[in-house]
Image 1: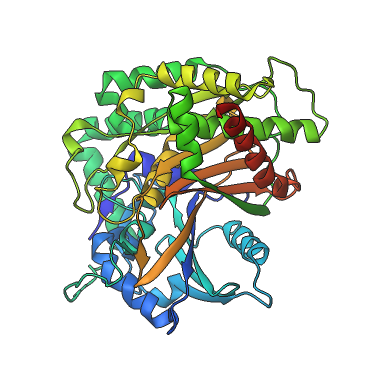
Image 2: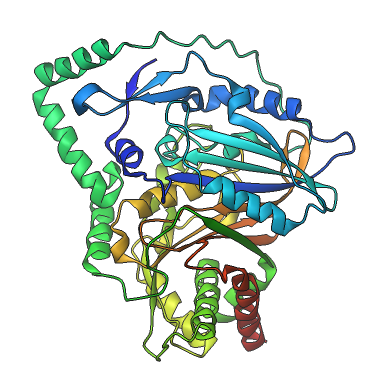
Length: 469
């Protein structure tokens, strides 16, 4: 089957370069069962779910001379063993070794001659655990008709549901000549539509969502976002190298709920306040000038539920919309409660705040939505000039109950957000089963001290907890 990439998908496909690969990453930590999670079992599990995510068996073909946007075509040579790979950590198999592996794998661009995804089964992790690291190109996941693979391989019960036999017959791949003739035919038959597609591409480059044009409220959000102007100067913004460092932190969700209840705000506000406090202390530790008015601007896309989709649970349907949201984190403010108050005020004034997805709603969705929601947030952020903000923070809610992958307990889940142009830090936050998991991706050269951030996040949360008591 051949279909043309949307304007935004084509933008993501072409924007990539060797230092900023345009992927969506996730790291899942699982409890190793007695019999182990075999490579063959993982292959079979993913293969059963591929009908729900048909893009994962398609590759991108470009049209000669750029006469039209590229097309998705079935990969007649699709080999699932190329995409799902095994890796093992050397003894002792520490978390630090796992994070180094994720950093190395995350720095490599995906092979554009094949379907744009990879999955690694990582063995040898201490404490009887295994890990699954996935990397999917941003062009592949739009959250509307294409979900992230981690979304569909997770189950609510230890016994996976039954799936019918998948008989997949790839369509014949068009020749270069056929692609050119098809593009010329579209220009002849529908020149107005083709010009509209060009205009849509330009608009998508500025907003990353064609849907925004149809909704006045969301267009207003975009206008306000762009009107904020250039982000303040920050050591977070410099040339990005090809090398990465990855670190994680985990906090109890109950602690965030306690702060939320004490100060009558949203958990997302508390998350942003904790990050602001950590960044403040990180700047001070580096001897950076911090005045009472110093801010760091974050792009923190908000997951929003359209009313028509509140009861939607079928895979492949729109599970959420995501709205752009720029927030100036008051890192110059020394009082943690004042920092939280300022962030809560900024969030409350945002037009989408009343319809945010929360953890209670997300539980009703099929599968495990966070990987797809992170991907959608990254798509929104990537559509704006990196000069408008200093770093990306995606924060999405997940199921507050035990989930399983191939009958294996999912213990922890971390987003691995990509670094954008001239941005050396990105943070992905996921709530799951009573915990908040922070995935911290950074440039290896510009942020060699990224390993201090987990302890700084802990200190920042403790400040708020102490004040709330």
